[in-house]
Image 1 (cartoon, helix red, strand yellow):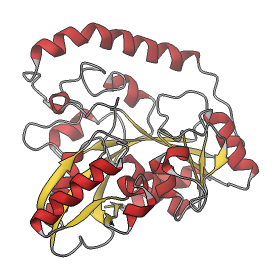
Image 2 (cartoon, helix red, strand yellow; image 1 turned 90 degrees about the horizontal axis):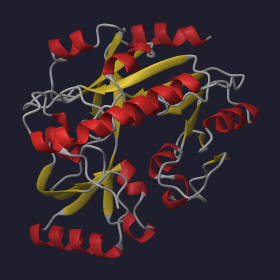
Image 3 (cartoon, rainbow, N blue to C red; image 1 turned 60 degrees about the vertical axis):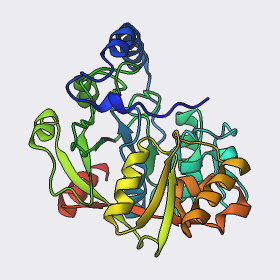
Image 4 (cartoon, rainbow, N blue to C red; image 1 turned 180 degrees about the vertical axis):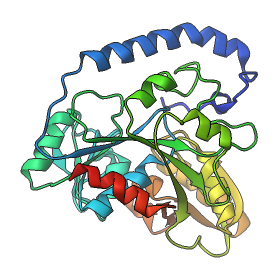
Length: 329
């Protein structure tokens, strides 16, 4: 059973759900200690080609995958993913004409529409397989806390949304008492740079957030529509780390949202759920719209009935990005 991302994780002052936070804090100490032990014990394998890791400091919902797509597009690289949610262990190259999200995961299937993508539970084996198949650069989707592959460049993507009391690192607690995968200082110490991903309707990053990330170079990118939102009234739905961000983004893009349904990350859509969504849309005389990632998980028969709204990461200072990427040569 997948659980939705707790909204209280992202309350900066720690006043939300204080009892639950307190109960979960000892578990977060164990999580942080085990993560540190595993990283320290790692023996990274060099696959023979540069590896750019695009990772997270938090449990998800940062917009990491659009950054992966943009970097792989710029570099002509192959993407390497764990294939979360898929049944295949790999290493294998994703074929969107043959594979399903249930086999290879939703994000790899989405990215494979226009990029060479590999999945592998064993990241080192996956990087080697990509290199043997001709990859000159591997862009690893997630894995900042995975020590199995030698990383040429490590980037961490940070959600730049800080309005309404929301803070990307919550009150600084580690999972399950908060959203962090490891203590912030430890995660930043292994990063070459941070990418703050801003929503299109936020003018600039919070100065306090920039101060929290002062230990590393910071690049600013925006999550921008890659196509207009569908015309007319729509019922939106999303099963991502922070589904409320999709709702905001659609509204900011001018979508006439009649209703919006949030689901847990990587939610598997069955016929009953989709029928309820279609019934809800019919009540409003509306269409159905979702993210590309969610669309990849839809049964084939439903894909013609649901619009996939694409977004992309747009870097504000491309010269700074190019200078950083030049280090992999």
